[in-house]
Image (cartoon, one colour):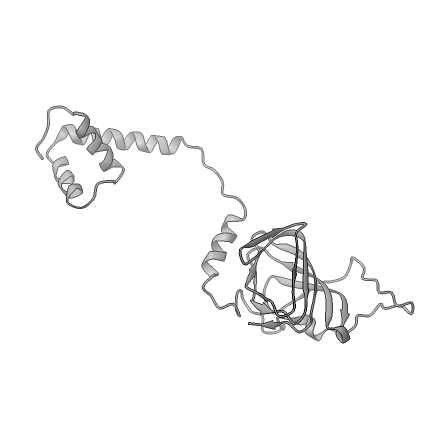
Length: 215
C-alpha cells in the first residue's frame, strides 16, 4: 500500500475501520505501516479520531442504577460455595431460630402479642437478621421477619416443612425468580431453595419449619 495524493471512498472506509479498531491481522499491520508513510491517510485518521473523542465527550454521563454494584458483586460471588455466601459470623448460628422457644408474652387467653418495637437479632451471616414473632416447636413452625442487607446471600437449603415467604420490602432473587414487595411464594416439604440473594436489601415475612437443612 503506497502513499496517496487524495482519498477515495475505499480509503476513507479503511481509515474509519482503523479508528474503530476493526481491522484485523495482516490487514491491520499493513495499514499501520502505511500510515507511517502516507500523510493524507494519517490526516484522515487523526481527524476521525478527534471527532470520535468529541462524540464520546458530548454524550451526557448516565449514573448507574443504585442496585447495579450489588448485582455485579452477586455475579462475582456466584461461584463461591453456597455454604459460605457472605462473611460468616462464628459467634452466631446461621439458623438461630432453631434455638428459639415459645416467646414470652403469651397471655392466659392463649393470645400472643409481638410489639413493633421488637428487636432483630443477628444470624451467622453478616447483614442477615431475624426477628422472632411466634414459635411452635411441637408443630415445627416458626413465624419471623427476616431482614437482609443489600448484596447479602442466604445458603441453599432443603425445607423440613412447608415454607411461606411474603416480601414486605425490597427484592429477593430465588433462582431465576426475582421477587419484589407484595410477592408471595410457598415451598413444599422436601423442596430445595438454591442460594437466595437480594440486590437492594429486603424485609421478608417467613412462616417455616424449624428443621430446614443447609446444603
